[in-house]
Image 1 (cartoon, chains in turn cyan, green):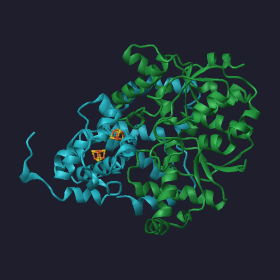
Image 2 (cartoon, helix red, strand yellow; image 1 turned 30 degrees about the vertical axis):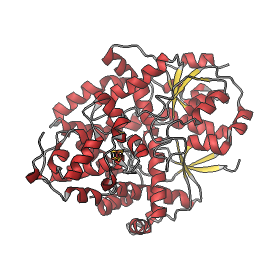
Image 3 (cartoon, helix red, strand yellow; image 1 turned 180 degrees about the horizontal axis):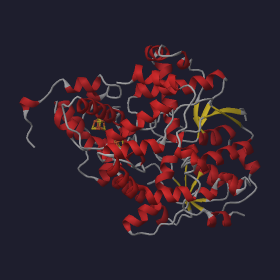
Image 4 (cartoon, helix red, strand yellow; image 1 turned 90 degrees about the horizontal axis):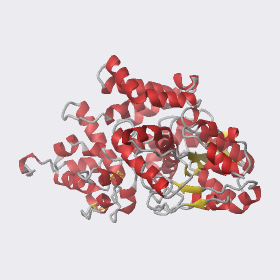
Length: 198
Length: 288
Ligand code: SF4
Ligand code: SF4
């Protein structure tokens, strides 16, 4: 893919550096240590964290934010641990994903991955109950990822009926998991989201 | 042994799919003579889904502040909760502006930075110590064990409590109770794909399959782990992985608190061993 120089956004790297987690991006000297040790690259060879950083530094904002790759990172910290320049790639990927989520919400880019839907549904449970309500998370995620309650429930049934039975049989999915476990002072958690949430 | 009481942070899966980790941790600590006081009204640590570090810090400032009021160090059996609690602890100590900003949100977040956040495995190995534990061992566990550490126990090294490349805290416990550690250094710290489970399941399955197959190839009787997300994939999802790839693994996956509990003579029921998905009967039988 040829780089369209006229489409580059030289400010992109500063935007990443100003996003918590992305501060160290400019230190990268492109050695590839991160990619060599990445457990995702081992399975999906096209996944290349070094290249994502290079593209970001060049200002290929749209390509980076719309790429499927940024949603493949397992946040495992292997790269961050090994990087000779202390780039903290694991956190950096998170910063790039959050920029992508924001731009997608503003309708500026298109994100194909369902991961932002999942993360959002997770945050919603937390904001509401103060703890993770797994059933609520699954319902919201499947409904939104499959665009509708019925199709969502069908997909959920397909993915989870066997696992659900297994957990139920071993006493891991009792009444406690059907209902949310709500903390007492949810107002404090709500405030955190209001003041800290992007 | 200095520690006699800790603030206990169970983490969200403790009531659902990681219930056996919660039960066995409590039983084990009772046996070790450490009182666990559950953090009153604790909130979720943000897991790996809350990606904004500042939001994670604010959420965990609340948990840390509650434990700090009782003047207790906080301990959790979940590697992800541990990572979030301890990185918050560090960030708030180092960044005074950020700490002031978070404190300004609500008095409940007024954390002064006086306690430590620890993984229960760290407390067991480095606080109680092997000498003390060996005095309490009443049964031999002559098993071949694959210790799987996953990500946050040693990585990133400024947060982790064990070696980032070759952690050995579980190895030492296994050997102490008469077990044999199978050669597993290639796999010990390789990510199981947990954070991708819901949104990129195929990839997560591939990643977990490698760990299961390696343990099997090394002749392990079981895998031990110290994180509910790793356990979810390795144990609860193991039948799905077997089905998807038409392979047979049948590898029991125990929490380290369960395996150690057996050696200390705790009843298998009290360790929640009936709740593991892959049967642990063979393991229980071999404990003498
Ligand atoms: S290891 Fe660090 S310096 Fe090397 S390419 Fe990756 S991010 Fe850049
Ligand atoms: S954190 Fe992401 S990019 Fe880094 S090694 Fe792990 S999966 Fe690869």
